[in-house]
Structure formats: C-alpha cells, structure tokens
Length: 325
Ligand code: SF4
Ligand code: MG
Image (cartoon, helix red, strand yellow):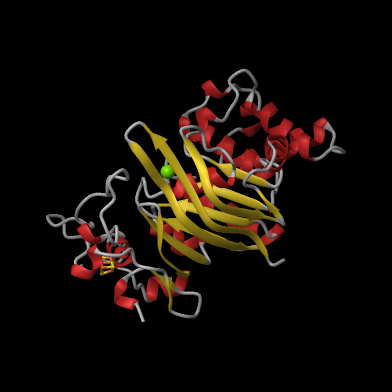
C-alpha cells in the first residue's frame, strides 16, 4: 500500500514496416507514495515511451505488447478508455515537452485551467476557481497573471504556454505527476522556480513524481531514486546518493562524467566529456549487451548473451556482466 505505481515487465513495441522497435523492453519499476523517481537517459532511450505507456497514450503502430502497470490497485494495461480518461488528469497528471499540443486553441488559458480545476472539485465556485488559477499562474512565474488569464494560447510565448501547462498539471494535486523534460525549454531562473514548486507540492500533499530527464543536475536536486535507461532497457537503478557516489554501470559512469560542473573550470578546447558513439538503431540492436559498441570495458562475453539485472543489495541493481556472481 506504500507503493503507488508498480510496473512489471513492460514491453511497448512499435510494429513498423521495417521491423519491430522494442522502445520499452521489459522494464520494471516502482514508485512509492511521496517519492520522486527519476528516469534518465539520452533521447530515444525509451523514457518518454515509458511515461506514455503509463498514461495509455501509445498510438499505433505502437502497442503495449506485455507486462502490467499497477496504479493504486488497478492494472492500467487493458483498462477501459473511459476509466483511463477519468484517471488521467485526475489521479495522474502529466507535463509534456511540447505545450502547443496540449492546450485547446479556442479557449483562453485561464478558462482551460479553471475548467480542469472545477472538473475535479464539484463544490468549488467559478470565482474561487479563477482566484486559484491566478494564484497558481503567479506561482509558476507567469507575469501579470490576472491579465494573462484572459489570453488565448497563441498569444503567449512558448515558455509561457509551458508554464500554463505546468500550472494545469499542478493545480489538480493528483496522486502521481509525470513530468517529461518539464523545464527543458525554460530559462534557468524559471526552471529553478518550477522545480522548487514541484518539490513543495510533493512535500505538502505527498504527491509522487516521475521525473523524466536527460539532465543529471535536475536528478541530483530533485530525485530520491533513479532508473538509468539505455536503448529500451533499465541499465542501473539505485538511490540517488548511491548512484552518484557509487555508479556501477559504464553507461551511468559516462553520463556522470558528462555533467557540467560549476566548480571546475571547463577546458574549452576539450569541451565536456561525452560518451563516444551513438545510440543504437532500435531495429538492429547489437547482440549481447546493447551498450557494448560504446563501452570501454567491453570484452567478448559482452557480445554474447544479454546481461541480467544483478541485485547488489541496498536497492542497487545493475545490468552488466562485470557484476555477475
Ligand atoms: Fe560494458 Fe560489457 Fe558491462 Fe555491457 S556488459 S556495460 S559491454 S562491460
Ligand atoms: Mg523524450
């Protein structure tokens, strides 16, 4: 009962003309009540597809090909469309990257957010809803919130639209908030403000948050527990302190080395460390460990079987043959 979300062996596959893309390939993860869980990895690693699977928003040719997603005692895989619609926005809310896709162009932004609020609070008056929306607009850093209440989405800049979306997701106070690169498009001051707001919300109402990001700085600041994804698979998972202090997977090590450090003068000519090579073609995954073409520790055995997730104890798991017992 302490767990709000439990994903077991999720497989989200895309059946394309060229073959099957295993975007999410046998992923299991858990989110406890009040926990902030990070999913990190480069773009295309399957982290967004994992969140869209939770929301049951995978469109053809994609499909959930296997596994379970237990949310608050229900399995969301195979749930009716109607039931899922009531869970979405109400019990689970999501902040996407592209705000334009999620706002209705024909209504003012204030009205849209107020509608969402009223939908979830039958006893609230319209005036009260409006007041709350204006307060939330101010909290997410929208200047002149009373004035902005009455404008249409196209009258706002991309950054302001994103803040409206964030306001909409936060105002519902849902049990689970999924934030997919929520602040990537925003400047650092607003980013810090919004991350703080999310953290306060978590503390205040015990919301659980899944934070999907490629930014390990955000993970360090926000998350309690972290999953590292690569080419559709979880490569490592651990408590945030453990992961940063004691990374085990060569991919995690690479990600950590590529974080810009404020305390170290960067060598301009060398630039930041980055992991050599490219994310693999998901239609033709490398045999064995899918990270082997980029791994500096790769040996022959890495090209054979797919490594299992090895439990190192202390809630720390890693998928690399170096740790096979
Ligand atoms: Fe590198 Fe081999 Fe470990 Fe894969 S299994 S991460 S290739 S050492
Ligand atoms: Mg993404």
